[in-house]
Image 1 (spheres, helix red, strand yellow):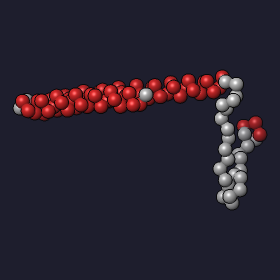
Image 2 (cartoon, helix red, strand yellow; image 1 turned 60 degrees about the horizontal axis):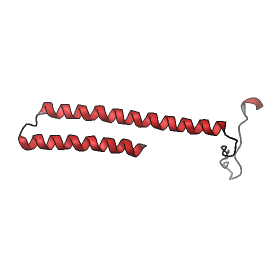
Image 3 (tube, one colour; image 1 turned 180 degrees about the vertical axis):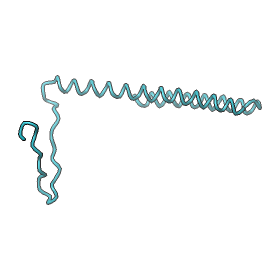
Image 4 (cartoon, helix red, strand yellow; image 1 turned 90 degrees about the horizontal axis):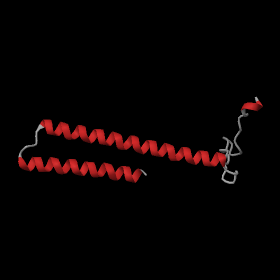
Amino acid sequence: MVSSAGDRLADVVAAVVEVAAEAGEAGTYTVEMAQTVAAVLNKVAARVVIDAEVRGFTSGWREAMDLAAGDGADAARSVRLPGPDGGPGAVPPGPGER
């Protein structure tokens, strides 16, 4: 999904560069035009990033709900990091064990 967002952004950047180059060749490239194309690029980039984040969140949420509703075959497993002495690390007590 990120690649499609990246592709959209790349297309917009290419179009902005093309318009700026044509204006430069025609001698009509001004400070106001530079500010305008920069503002357009900024708006589009912000929308692309927000869309990518929302899609990433929803797909991650769907995956989490599928795991929670599943039969437990794909359940997450706990892994303990080694303690300072190289042995198994201490496991803090759970909420019901305090």
